[in-house]
Length: 448
Ligand code: MG
Image 1 (cartoon, rainbow, N blue to C red):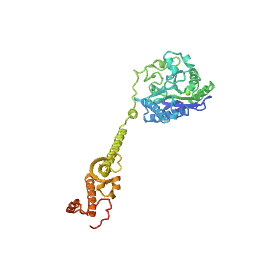
Image 2 (cartoon, helix red, strand yellow; image 1 turned 90 degrees about the vertical axis):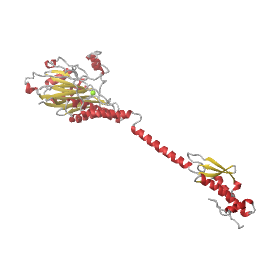
Image 3 (cartoon, rainbow, N blue to C red; image 1 turned 60 degrees about the vertical axis):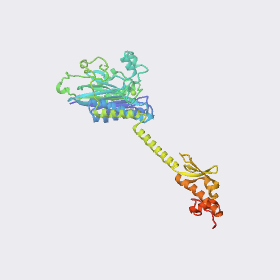
Image 4 (spheres, protein in one colour; image 1 turned 30 degrees about the horizontal axis):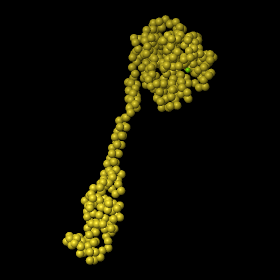
């Protein structure tokens, strides 16, 4: 069983007006986040990252769980910045440590992104566990700068990794065997930019109470300039599992595992005897994301892929339905326009047209029959109506209408002049005076 004792302190410093650092201190989970970004973006990013880390780690309190919790914190800050354009560009560092049980043993899992740091103080020696993800430190690791040059390099504050600035993040992770008497320091760069590792080590070596240590370190950073926010979390291993198996703390094994590199972390000062026994595990240990995290990643990837498609299934269906409605409307209107006839006049001749009087929306009238009947052959009172067009429902009814007009005119003539030859023929048909013209007022007739 392992017991920890912790404390923390934070300060805005002497230059900044707001504190964008945030500390997390709980019985088994500790973290420091150093937010960045204007318009309160740094505060929002640090708060989102810390809150997400705490909730996600509670779901899976393991080394892999810590790894996933940091990745989830990244997604949370990134998603929030995408949804809130005024916060674009915000981000945060994150260094986090958790006491977890793996294979029946207590271990410390430690994760890092950015240039906040984690140190281990063991038997009087201070070791920096994390590697800064800053441009200057990357150049040091590449052999392009010395530590002294990096300390004053103009790009020493430019980060090469931070949470929330991209949808994907690479997280460094270590497993460490907790040993009784060891102390751990998580801090923002507001501490390490102002005081040296030797000064930190001196405080850790001489002050027992962790709260006093945290307060002294913050005060020292203020005294040396306080140009940035300063945050420190201290936790001491007051009982370690090695107490049960090896009370003399002889059998200590510390494993540093980084997923991105086989190299052990940078070390400050001479390695302690215990550190000389450090053996990196064979290659990066596969800290598999949890089932829940993999499912979440797949869903996000599918969602992102859907978002990139030019035409989605839903929009395609909408276009097809809309096209169907338009086509159906077009056919209905055209059918209505073309499903009619009317009788009109063209060069004094009665003509039958296919279409609506005056023309339709989608169908222009077409001449289908010239009747050979002139306006002189029909009653004069229907001519104005014919000039406008007389609608009929079919070609047959239009032809009947014209025939009736002609017959009516003959009948009228025969009433006035029964001796005409045509009147005798009409009399034989028995239609001399009984014909009516649809839509017309018949003339007043006199008895023969
Ligand atoms: Mg800072």
